Length: 416
Image 1 (cartoon, rainbow, N blue to C red):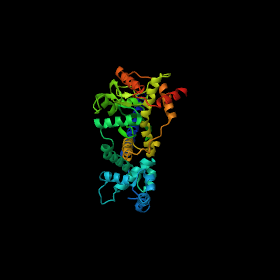
Image 2: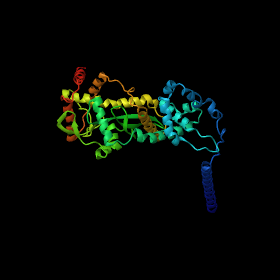
Image 3: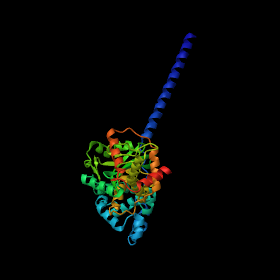
Image 4: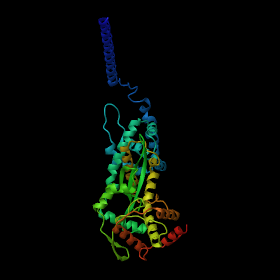
């Protein structure tokens, strides 16, 4: 009985072990099969068309071959369509053609440089999606995406040295003279401003654009690519412009006397900015606080009067290129190219020196700006930076530096 029982137990134990081993083996086989199936390359989906029939008829129905060729005969319509004259377009094409030209192959005919430039300009001017532009020009969506990226890159590299060169000392002096002649602000190298470019590519984010603008709303220097969540002051501190100003490696002219005020001594050349930027010896911002004395309010008015050209420049940029009025649906790397190309084109289209894009002066805008300055908090600044601001304040309140309208503006803002 005992032997039989033991034998039975022994057989029972052996059967359970065998079953467990079999189950484990089968699980392992299933896992192996699943892994093999997962790593097994799926057969590539066969393309229905090498070139879609709609795209084959590009020369018959595409916007470039139909509408645009006719617009060249009607210059007003061409200017409305491209935001530039026919001659400006032809000159631009001549400069960019070597960079946009593609080699002929046995597979398909390359897209000519003129059509590539046209596609890129329509993207910048309208802000339409790649799908909309692709349908209009009878091109593939991926082709439009590649054209925009390459053309923006070519625009920046071809126009950068001509339209946004590294300023020399003589260029800085000319800019300072222009600020004094036009906006009654001597020793001014430019107006600083920041803009956020909204993007929506696998999530919503913003890219920072920092620009230095001259007295005629032309971009002198631009810095693109910073995180939009950073403040303008932080972007400026990390930018190449900010570092060059701190290092003194930007060919800035030496200090000079303010016109008609030798008693103030030689004063540094400065950049004017809004309350988002810190006060530096080379960077002026307004006096913070409320119930400021008249002389400080006059300084704030004169600074805002010179600084508003930077806001005008961004307004001109957005009006010319409506892509900045929408959320960009492109890769982050392409965003930088789009912004740089638009700034270079904006300068290119203003190279004739015309003032038709300048926003008119608005006294009430100045009053609102001054009220905003009163509410902005102060920041710690060095004694040297405060002394530079004091010198400009004294100059603007002296007979040599005052302008007839400043007291009316200050009195109007205080009354309101």
